[in-house]
Amino acid sequence: MTNSAPAEPAPPPSSSARTSDRFVAYVHQVCASKQARAALRRGLGLPVERCTYMHRYLVPWLRDHDDQHYGDVRRAYYAVAALIAARPRSARDTTPDQDASVPWYERSNLGASLGQAVAKGVLKENSAESALHLMARQSSDAIHPGLPALVRQLLSGGIPIDWALLLEDLAWWNRSRDRIATRWLESYFRTAAGTTDPTPADSAEENDR
Image 1 (tube, rainbow, N blue to C red):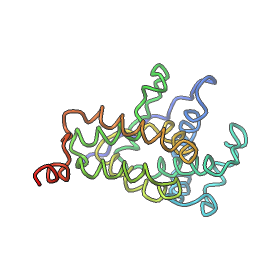
Image 2 (image 1 turned 30 degrees about the vertical axis):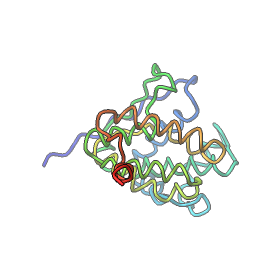
Image 3 (image 1 turned 90 degrees about the vertical axis):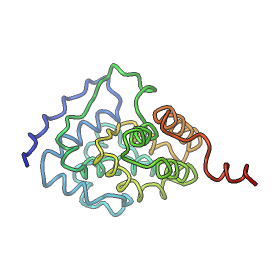
């Protein structure tokens, strides 16, 4: 087995980049240190109040760039930082894509990533759809604990995740859940088109009665 060469550090984003993109670039740079990466990883699925080892790396950045004190927004920052730090080695060895030429609304949200996973056989259709529909009914407090396992499964299967977009969606989830969930579901079905069965099994059974 050959070891993959370490990824090049993410290029510093321009001053015109979205705050979320700048934060993601910062976290990738921090994760170049094994000690820092381990500290950030300890916050997986936890509320901010239990992420004591993460404060050293995130509080100064938030103070200088965003300083969000709104609970949902702050937790989104911590959650995404922990998820990035916990990436499997195969995903860590991939340089993050920060193509600013792609319009924000065309970037792949979590629904699109799940659609890619189904199309590539990384996830079963029922599992992906069930995860989406469950999250669509939940608050962010219920979503956060389940994200690490789902994200790791996607990354281990080679499915990329737009961390900046995930950060913003999580930050706004409790205030715009229906809008964001609809966007995730639409992106999922567009991406997984041709691989999903348009007739759920329970509907077919109902028609046979």
